[in-house]
Amino acid sequence: MATFVFKAVDLAGVPTRGELDADDKQAVTSQLRGKGLIVLDIEEKKTTDIGDFLGRYKRVKSQELTVATSSARRSPTSAWTSRRGSRSRTR
Image 1 (cartoon, rainbow, N blue to C red):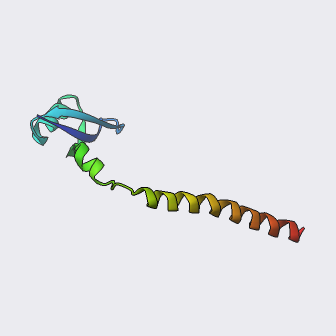
Image 2 (image 1 turned 90 degrees about the vertical axis):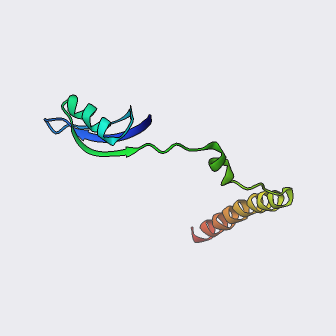
Image 3 (image 1 turned 45 degrees about the horizontal axis):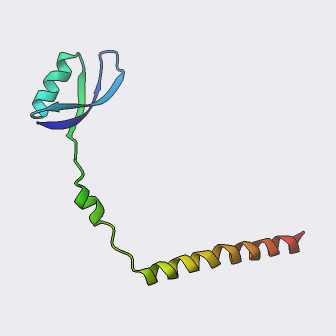
């Protein structure tokens, strides 16, 4: 059994969204029609495997982290003071 995400409207045209567990799309359609809904779209809900999710992130070496954080620490401060200095000159 799989989980399906659906979009439907009732006879008054009020939109409805939700999820249903069923064997296939036809079973979802039958359930929704039984509730008096007109089916607009049905898709099988994609499950996220935790291994795939974590696999996107690579391990950061300590030296790379040091370079990134030290650059970030210097950059906003110097940019802020230079902007601040230019503002005081224009007044």
